[in-house]
Image 1: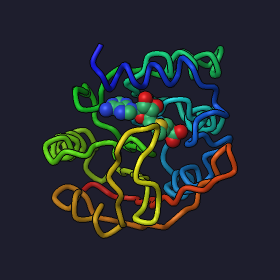
Image 2: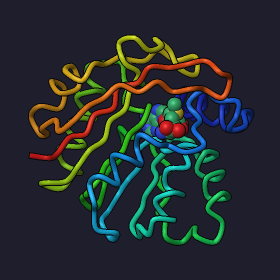
Image 3: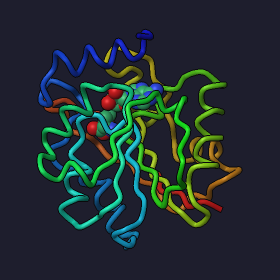
Length: 204
Ligand SMILES: C[S@@+](CC[C@H](N)C(=O)[O-])C[C@H]1O[C@@H](n2cnc3c(N)ncnc32)[C@H](O)[C@@H]1O
């Protein structure tokens, strides 16, 4: 097992939902953005680094039928599967480092909250950009939420890259146009705050 996978398996093997800073009972900002898009319920949606997020649970309840969650941690996906219970079969679970992901279909919506920002090396960021340029349909959407420039510099003991909307716009400029962005302050389960920047892009 490589170091990064080992790290995340360790987190999900030892910490409950309430013990990880990124946990949200209801991922309000992401759900609002997705609702505004008025996507067809059978569109292909993927949550990158979905971890223990409740996002796909809410999307299932809203009637979306083609959902996928990718995470480097199999333990995280096991836990999310257990939460989804009988609705399991309508979700595609993918255990992979996003940088090794080879999608066999194109997505209408790519959602990533607090995973992209763990990429700190230029070549990793370039790989992610090439991946989304290939994996998101023409006219499809991408939501990227990261720590903002006033947010934390590390997460889960790992370095992250902070972004502004302008910086994200520049990173993804070849394949995507920025539709909207806003800042959001996340209240962690330990009553501290983390500043995020949310961006919605459309594939050119
Ligand atoms: C900070 S958590 C955010 C979880 C979820 N997106 C949320 O908003 O609640 C980061 C997640 O990304 C996953 N992750 C980190 N690096 C990854 C990588 N290179 N490829 C795939 N998943 C990764 C971790 O296992 C973890 O579940």
